Length: 371
Image (cartoon, rainbow, N blue to C red; front, side):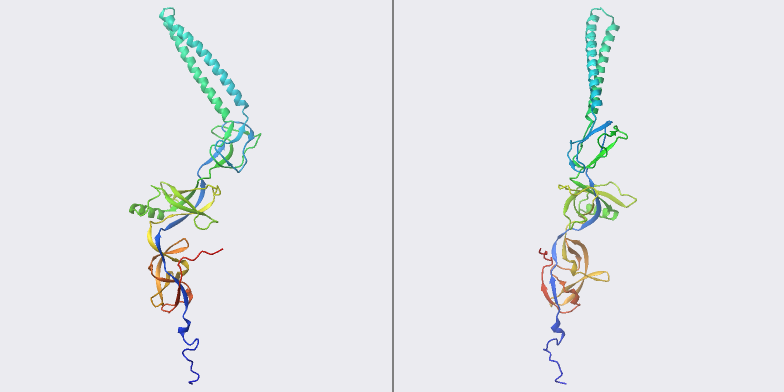
């Protein structure tokens, strides 16, 4: 029996020879700010439907469909000849009106002299003066008709009112279009691209939270000042686009329980277009002192979160914590940890409460992968 007894120093003799190895790190202490996320759609800052102002046949389409145009660029030309003829007729009528007005003015001037010499009656003098005034009014009317005719002639050249990306031509050369303010023919559409808007719907609970924060001075409300906003498209990681919330509607929609808001973002490369789905985040709190840990270090215990913390004897201690949101890939810890605590980040499966471990310290922020 003595010969069969294993020596205490033999390999694998006792539990002290199998101390688990773990990797631990201290939480990152820094000034933090919570962010609230919303979904939205990109919309154009300006959108113009190009309609014909005068009727006629389209003689030229001067743009390439789907490209960018600048304000003032020629888009369509409507046959100007009928309107040029109207302008020439109006010019002739104006010349005739001016001649008639000059003759009436001479007669009115003579009537004044003749009246002083008692050569004509007062009624005749008054008639000539009124006739001169009427002819001057006729001149002004002819001038207004000429301006209107020239304006219609100008409208035969349809130019871009804004800069942006243009759609396709809904009407091609040779087709008759209708002008005017009603039932005018739609020719094309232009949308402005830089900057670009993202419209979001904020729920009532969030709106009340933001107004309480404004009331307490924790964070300004977007109703009174612009606040920062960050955005990502569905194929983008992180929050690469930075802008501002520049508009909040004046009432809650009772059907949805949300309020409409709008963020504006630079779009210098014009790669973002109206209609894209986007994620937007805005500050959900003021700045505060907080701790960050790796999300992989957090365990779940029947709906409660916990981490393993090492005491001064390198024994694992079960520590319940209250978590906040993810921030740049790290998890915010609301309570339960201190900045000097050593948190197990690797080797969690081999850790039990009160078990002695062999720790290796590392940085809480994982190193960026090398390419």
